[in-house]
Image 1 (cartoon, rainbow over the protein chains, first blue to last red):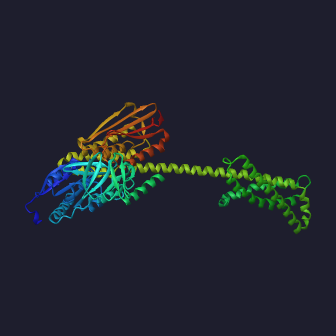
Image 2 (spheres, chains in turn yellow, green; image 1 turned 90 degrees about the vertical axis):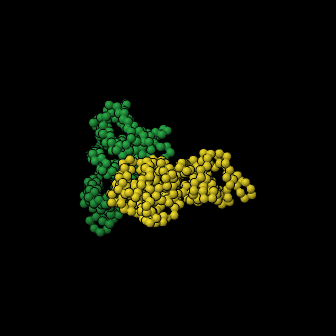
Image 3 (cartoon, each protein chain N blue to C red; image 1 turned 60 degrees about the vertical axis):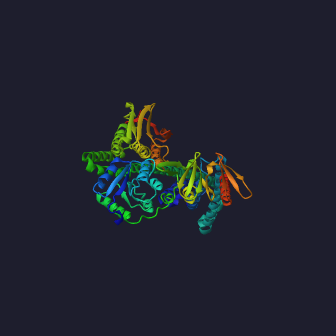
Length: 256
Length: 357
């Protein structure tokens, strides 16, 4: 607590229902040390508010328009205290995985809210755990990724995986090529590979994942190397092991 | 094993049926100056007793070549061969009995020689008795098949009813309740009157769901009242984001439909449509009757960018299944997306107060 004395905790409330926001406002009104920096009614607003205002604490609903609560966190990182507020109990394990401070089930009592607040104060007083690689942990592993969310400043792009042509590793980032544009996202190419549907996307190179629906042909490039040509004319290098995987896939589709 | 052996009563009846047959045989053997009554009886009784069981073997060929599925020639050849063989066996058996009787009792001496004149008669009776047994077995098999069909039909009905009950029970979504209670909880301090109103709306909705859910059919108007109650509650949560349009023709309000048919569709429209739109949207419900068919359309705005929800299918499948068990091919449900509009259309046969309109 010593690091925070004299300094207010700045909180953001994110919920698409006015009454739910009103309730949090009411419960927080008795706490002078907490200042409500913003209220957001959907995921886009939340990303914008958190990016610009850098609050200490977020009260976050999960089921919301545009971006759900986990997608919001994926874009803004977890280096701040998060209290989930939701009517659904099935996300509790995922919330635990990303070190959420607490998980409030609607409807909740004022006493229960106080406990959550107490935990948040403790978390903010101590050291925050290092941000985890959210994109892999924030989603049930059985379910392949359906869309990728990317943030550019306070702007958010949603890329349905069907529209992703390929992904290219660039240091700590991946460049996602879609509809003639490239979006940069802070994520390793391996974790992206693990999240994508393996029957639709293939790692053809240490630095490349390709959308198999886009591949029109595979051509020899040099003695040991190949390139794939995508429907928009883009050529991507294929490594030797990538070529083996590609051949396996093509043989399987032909067999079917 | 032959089914008669598992039912002693029926086996007894079957054996009893052989008594008059044995009587006729005795009559035939004594007629025309043949055997004496005593001799004929002494041969017939053991002969028929054994043959009664032998004839049960007809069950196997009868089961192997069912009447309606087998060719006439195959049927004829199989049973004629079996009949000829069994007739021969039966004649031979009669002779053996006569020899045994002649051997053990002096009063039956020469019985086998006297019986020999009746060989053609015996053979023909043996063949005829087998033919009767075949007829009997085909009747038995037909009866068994019809009983099985009845059991299957009953089972199908029970399954259909089960599915319907399950569908009904799944109607009231617990998360809807949790969110409602949260709204009530929020209202208690800011607007106690509104909180009370919400409690009453919720109680009315739950009570109506229970009451209507127990019925076989309800009028469209009753269902619409339920839907309006449901929307009034959601309106408290979503405020201006939720808008409703209703376009129901007068002549269709008395049409009979299965209960809780539209409420889940409207719930889907909110969960997967309106709830994903920051600015909200419109749910449009229209119904009309044309040419003995009731058409109902539930339409809502949705965000084409939001990922296809995995669970949408479930509610629709439930409704499809319920319509299927109740109306078969006469009813249908179809789903269409047009730009940012999502449409579910239902067609079902027009019925009013249990009478086909």
